Each structure stands twice: as C-alpha cells, then as structure tokens.
Amino acid sequence: MRILFTTLGSPSHGRAQLPLARALAAAGHEVLAATTPSTASVFEHDDVRVTSSIKDFEPGSAALYAMKELAADQPELDDRQQSALMMRIMAKALSGPVAKEILDVTLPLVRDFRPDVILRDGMDMSSVLIGELLGIPQLPTPSGASNTFDPAAILPGLNALREEHGLPTHEDPLSIVPHGRVDYVPPAFSFAKHLPTSLAYRQTVTVDRHSVLPPWVAELPTDRPLVFAALGTALPMMHERKSDKEAPDMPFRMPDPESTLRTIIEAASQLDECTVIVATSGLPADTDGLPPHVHITERLPQPLLLESVDLFLTHGGFNSIRESLRTATPLAVLPQFGDQHENAGRVQELGIGREITDRTPDGITAVCREVLADSGITARARQARLAMLTLPEVENAVADLEKLAG
Image 1 (cartoon, rainbow, N blue to C red):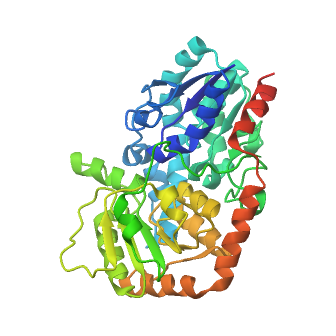
Image 2: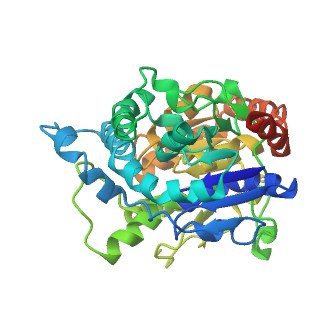
Image 3: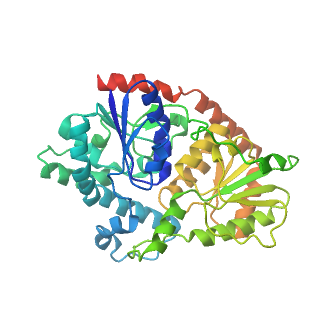
C-alpha cells in the first residue's frame, strides 16, 4: 500500500502525522510526505520519503486573496472576534486560491506516486479534489484546522474548483470528509466542532524517539507544584518570518509573541509558591533578576515533562492539548490566534482547565492559582486520561487504512 501525507501548516502538523507515518512504514507500506521546507525535517529521521514541494504557508499572503470582502466595514473586534475573522479569511483562502496552487503542484506528484490513501493536513483542501479526480480515499489528520474550519465556509471555494476541473459540485459541506477523519481524542473529549465521528487512536506519549529531559530538571524541588509554560511553535515561527521581510497588512491583529512571553515570565515570577519552567521557543527573554523558582529554557521535550507537571500554562494549540489530555495535566489556556480561542473555550467547557481572559500578569497568575486549587479540574483531567487510554494504539490505523484502500 502507498500512503501520501500532505503537510502545510507549522511543524506541529507534521508531528501529529509522524506516529501514523511510522506505523505505516513499520508495517511495510510505502510512505511519502509532501510538505513544506520548514516542516520537512520532522520526517527526515524516519523511513519516510519526503518532498518539499509545497510552499511554506504564509497566512498574510493567503489572507490577501480574501481580505477585501471579509474585512470591509469591520467594527472594533475583541480577541475572540478577531480570531473568528481570521479563521473565516483562512477558510476562504485555503478553499480557493491556496487549494488551486497546491493542487497544481501536488496533482502531478500524486499521478506519479499513485497512492492508495491520502492523509492530508487539515488545511489542505486540494487533496479533497485530488481524491475526487482520481478516486483515492482521503482523510484529514489531527490539527486545529480540522477541528475549527466550518465545512460550509469551505464549500463555495471547493465547488468553484470542482467546476473548473469538470467535477460535479456538492451541496453537502461534509463532502470534504467522505471517509471521515483521523483523531487522537475520544469522542467525549472531541474538539471538532463540525466534523463527524473519526477514526480515533491513542495519543502517542513521545513523538521524538530519543528525547530526554535535561539533567537540571531532576534537581527541581518536588515539595511544591510544578508549572510549565510554553508558547508553542507556530506563533514564534510566523514572528520570525515577519521579521525577515515586510509582511502584508492583515485585517486581524496578530499577537506579539515577545510581549506575551514577557507577560508570562512576569506572571511566573509571582507564583512564588510553585516551581515554574518557561520555554521560550527561541524568543529573546530577559532573565535578569528572576526569582529562583522560575527556570527559563529555550526548548525541552514537552510530552515528557507533562508527565510530572501539576499545571500547563499553554497557548492552546491542539498538539499541546492532546498531550495534556494524555498525561492528565490541568490547563490554564492563554490563547493567541486561530483555533486557540475555540480550544480555550472547549477546555473550560470540558472542565479540564480554564481560559485566561485577563491577559495581564495578575490575571494569568490568578487563573493558574485557581486551577491548581480546584480538585474538580484535577479529577476531570484524570477522567480524560482514562478516556484516552480506552482508544487503540496508533498502530491499529494500519489495518483500518488497509481496509479503506481495499
């Protein structure tokens, strides 16, 4: 069996696909990842062929295609409304000009590789058309895009491309997932707003096979709560690209990750009853005068650390949330952009943590203390982990996909 993966988001999208790719390759199937230059390294140490044939995704450039119509006469919007506007613009762009661009690049590759199944990035709508053109089953892999995009907003752009390629149009928005989707979360804890029941497998504890925690972590005091704070990878990556060249104006605000990091560090400094580790994702951080209970590091293996953490102060990316569910780690969510606001609301709805709405250091500190003191959140997080453990290991996806491919 030949399996094609497509990845066009941040490296975290590739990391979500990697356990599936490994399982398929280990079962003797041929795996090809069509991805972007910034994500190709995720797959390079595994038995997976990689082609960097897809351009790095630039949200500003993609938004240009749709911003005039959607940004016209917008009133002053709060953070959640700004995030919703961003997702509408992204949906319009991804289902129209971006899908067309990726289709032109990927279709020749698919004709040559002749995959039996396509496992696509949740932002890749071109593979929906490729599946229809060539009769290949396709399923989206776990990502915030799969969870958040409204298929009804995707449908008009896809129908226009269907007509362009001589395909019949569809009235059903769920025509984008005719074979369902892949997830690593049980239905009771699903973050998908619109898509139907998935093929669900257990979240892998460790994606990086050789990862270990640095020795200094073992020297931290264990007589107080351990808090971990991180910003994720997508926002720092976009911030770095923006500094490389002049980015186009966008009709929504993008948060400043350096300012957010400073605020998180200030909040961590106030949590003097805890030990706090802050991962900077490579962003500059002023460590002068920090109290001894705050420890700054650029990066460390997050899934490993979460096994011993009492609270995760997170941006609310879907990878981070799944890893927290797997380790029963309560959450304080400080959402930044995109699907993260929806994720924060779902975290609070599920009772596994709380959303931070007061984004000042005092507001962040208050929510962290509330979550640490709430035994109900801890119990609910344990319940979520038990539900995660009822799912089959990801290796079971091999037989399911073999059956789908016939």
